[in-house]
Amino acid sequence: MTREDIEDLIYEMYGNEYDILIADNFDDAFLGVTERPGDEGPYIVYDYWKCVDIVLKQLEDDDQSYDLDDAIDFMEYNVITAYVGPHTPAFVKR
Image 1 (cartoon, rainbow, N blue to C red):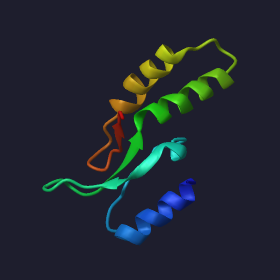
Image 2: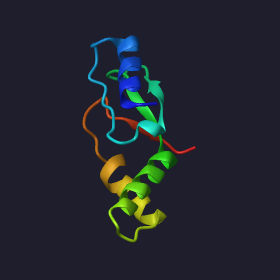
Image 3: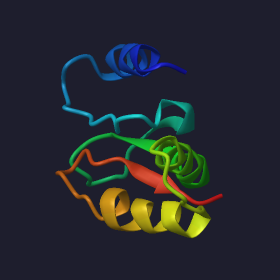
Image 4: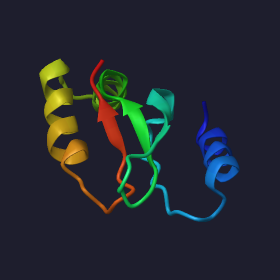
């Protein structure tokens, strides 16, 4: 799924009602959109391990020697902990 596909899906579901955040470069890890009762609105859900694979490929493209642990560290410290409001994406480990 492309970013444009994700944007179209969100628009079909919610119009412009919410500022749902789409994480950069993780389109291939997109799982869907979810909500919780009492929450402040919907948010996107990504496959955590697919995101790790994407990060690892990006790190390797920088001509550095990185491994899986480096990609997981990057995910944990730069992505997972980055709360940017109620529509911050979630990452599911499955």
